[in-house]
Amino acid sequence: MTNTATTSVWGGLALWKKILIGMALGVIVGGIMGPSAEVLKPIGTLFINAIKMLIVPLVFCSLIVGVTSMKDTTKMGRVGIKAIALYLGTTAVAITIGLVLANIFLPGVGLNMTVSDPNTVGKEAPAFIQTLLNMIPKNPISALAAGNILQIIIFALGLGVALTLCGEKGEPAIKVFESLAEAMYKMTELVMKLAPYGVFGLMAWVAGKYGVDILLPLIKVIAAVYIGCVVHVLVFYSGLIKVVGGLSPARYLKGLVTPAAVAFTTTSSSGTLPATIKASREEMGVSKSISSFVLPLGATINMDGTALYQGVCALFIAQAFGIDLEFSDYIVIILTSTLASIGTAGVPGAGLIMLSLVLSTVGLPLEGLAIVAGIDRILDMARTSVNVCGDMMVTILVGKSENELDESVYNKTTASSHKTA
Image (cartoon, rainbow, N blue to C red; front, side):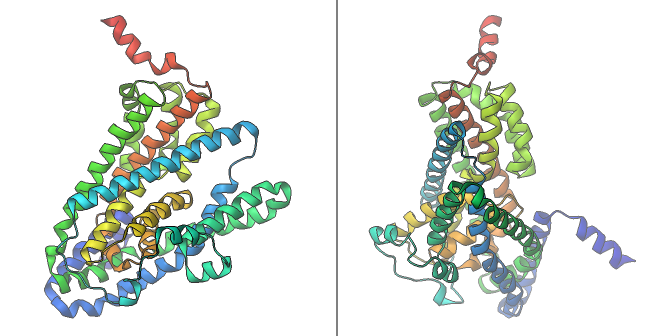
């Protein structure tokens, strides 16, 4: 009876709570067992291998579905180009902010961790021009088999555009990829159920080998991500609203309160979509046609907060393992995170899987995921809020450019306060 009750309680816990418990137990067990905790490492290795299994098919199918979901009408094509350009541009800025903050905070410096499989890191960084040339795969099948993420992203984007241009003849293939994408989302959900056990095994090994001092730098990681998120919204987004849109940043920030709060608590851009659409129409004055197209698109491809988090965490892991990154590695991290944001699935654990994609692209050890996974929920709250704030900002700017922003509604609070005064 007791076992049944325990199983019921465990089954009722949210995934992030299970991961936190797994991390805490791993630290305790590792601290007690010391170096002998390495016997538990295969549990974590199993989880890491399962994540590796997901990366290529998940990114490939999600990207194609993301591109083909855009309808090819004149207006929607124009609006889509504006929105995508803004989404991808702000994502590149977000990850750059993350990289800068990670270089300022240096959260992983001094940990002196070692890689169990030296073959996964230490590859020579190619020249910048060569990196750009290598983005186009000579053989797409070979790129898929080798797991060359940048080449896979470029090929998937091209194939998605081609299928869209094919019209009705491309519909059967699009439906196949939509089905495959749904299957990959479900498989991701199943693999993430292993996360608490995988994190337990890896954290026990890490704590046993390096001691509990490994946890202290995580405070710096959290601080860097949260500071980056605040800067991105208050400085960059507000600046674009003022400079590009010629609108009041204060009004924009006030309209964000409800959607940002929902995003912070639910950690789901898609789940926050009803609140975001309501706020964009009723508080910001964006037309129904613009908000109904740009916001769902943003919930799919705008991952500024996730990109910022990936920048901080990638450098944290590089610093922790004593791996020096070249300039070309930074460029690859920015390109990979920006382009892969289109294919980020709206399912639990997707941010962690996308981080594994970035790590594998630049040859950083995936073992570092275990350290970050324990605080992923705390980071997820901040990055989801930023994603939603970015969706709203782009919707306002696109609405203004299309003359579909009712500025009397946008400025209603300011106007009413002047009347009161």
